[in-house]
Length: 146
Picture 1 (cartoon, rainbow, N blue to C red):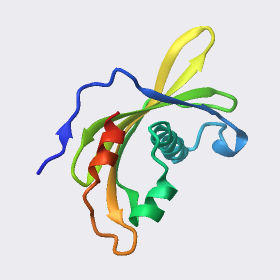
Picture 2 (spheres, one colour):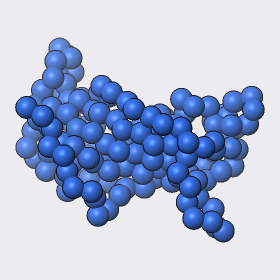
Picture 3 (cartoon, helix red, strand yellow):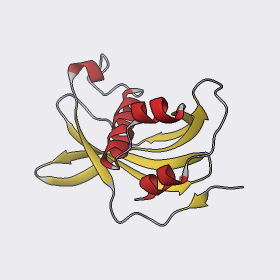
């Protein structure tokens, strides 16, 4: 069975990120792997905004979310002190996984936001002890879509 594509969202979740020295490489540009960290933080906060606490899910259900696939495209560089907005929205929801589309956008007071990096992240739902895929409970599926 294939995941169900969802219509484009009316409400895209955003999470602010400021670029610090620790985020940059020797050239003063954000190190490429740090965009994955920014995306992870935004996904976690997206879940929290939907009332989904990952630690509680693990304790109550014995299952966890794991990233199973990432597609990422770098378009422009972020630099020290830049302010970004990282977006997240659900694009597909299957029985044991979902896909989130994400972007890192440079924001400034005097210009429109500029997309720096885009990504598609597939997240699986697995049993914590066995690492085998599990079916996402209906109430959790509803929370993800809400």
